[in-house]
Length: 194
Image 1 (cartoon, rainbow, N blue to C red):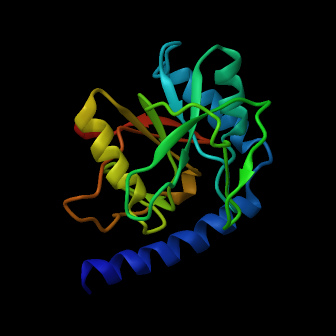
Image 2 (cartoon, helix red, strand yellow):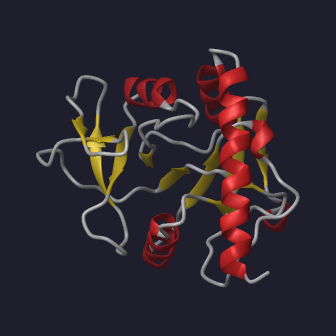
Image 3 (cartoon, rainbow, N blue to C red):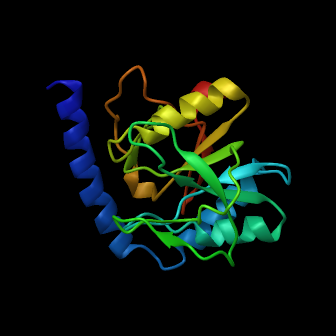
């Protein structure tokens, strides 16, 4: 099986598994994940943290983003401005009115300032013990992480449910690794960084 087919198969299996996990998950999974992220000490008051607005069966980051903004941390959400281009990030606060953008997604309005993150909370369909993730297949996060890493220090934290871990994620040379994974069950740094 070639890499394209392997990724397609992995995505389909991972999406089905994540949907089942989400349906069975405790309603406080997002709050538990938030506590684990905060306990890592990876986010400081001067960081700009990129989260994402939960779509479908993704774990809910709103409790974490709300807590961070309450601590004075700048939070941003990703925006697709052009197909096959890196994401841009607009500031988010709990009182901001989100704009619907199709496929069940929402984003901050165009009037929100753009900021580059120093910490990225990356969504995923699956992750493996080597620190690789598989997303939805558009390549937006891989392009964005490569660009941000080239510009300066960046911490990339994959976030999802513990049951989204798989034996191995199929990957290419352009796939960007995670530095950490945080789930509702805990946090861990990937061994290649230890």
